[in-house]
Length: 497
Ligand code: AHR
Image (cartoon, rainbow, N blue to C red):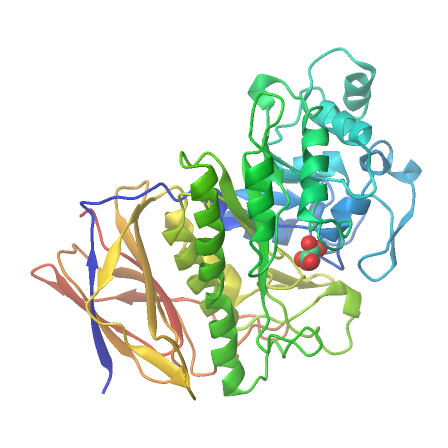
């Protein structure tokens, strides 16, 4: 017998706006994430527009990507922006020491990044180099990108083909400064942040939001130190603190688990691991609440997603992994959590957009495939800039494995910009549909993503193994009874409530 749950949507108690950037993406110079995945160059046989492959471009346009983070990641702290401007054939060849030690020919640089973001209509998040750069290098990059003054640097930008300044929406000072970004302590980083921040200037109408690089996993000391030591002012801007959390099914970096062909236990443990992010958000935002009760400082999860053992036979430094139904379920669960904490969590960036970790898109030369995570993001487009609506559940069925349990059902609702109310529902169980009853709705129509196979995934040979299908429930006197299949994600439009 399937469990039954009634979900009440409290339209009368609207919460914060779900910043569209909660659905942000991350593209790093890592493996085939940018080169081949996005950028093939104008001379490629792969159809492209100004060097950007057309198939990927179209798929990302369809996804309404709100925000792009670039150039890293660990790569950011070794990136010297001047290497990536000017005639491509003259750009220096460097080594990508973080990711496979491959040659970086710098074909994709500042101008290419902004051209790509503009094609997508996405906001931009540039991650500055604190690790191996200098205040001068960072200050000059920001000036090059944002200034209209008649300086030598701006003249150089114009000579490189860009008259008007680029729009930099967000700018971060370093990345994972506790690790690949320089093995720093929170105290040391906070002092450096204050130092750099004093010089990071841009015109008022093109002033990015500044992001301090924070902690990871269950750490709270980075948030604590940054919130204590940095009191934002006109010369010390800190609009947000970032945080990273990756889902590893085995919780063991040595053998993380496989992306497909995994045991049932790892379906459960992956979901269990991913749900921990809510505790980490709660613990860190509680610290912010103490120091910043007006909630001016955001808490951005600018790297999250699944991290598995790399696909067999691929370069271990390229972090290439398949993506299955489990990833879509994980995306749904994370999205629900982010929505619940949208007051502070105004941005997140899933790692990473193409060909790296929990990707939206996989490519193999001229072939492209959309992953279940792509579809999870696509189904949530109405949630971008929607107004959060609290919900309550009449029961909280659990899904058990041994002594451990996780919620069997997870949901999130919002009133979208189109005036309709949407609900997103996940059934985490491998077996057993759950009957969900919704009252006072006008309709219940949308998409469901599911399969009988727990690791169902799309391949280059069979790109349509898993796709969302249409779903529609009868509504009688405002009541809809929805049978949410095992291991599924649903997003339904409930009409104008
Ligand atoms: O996303 C891959 C890497 O994970 C990033 O470069 C780094 O910031 C994190 O450790």
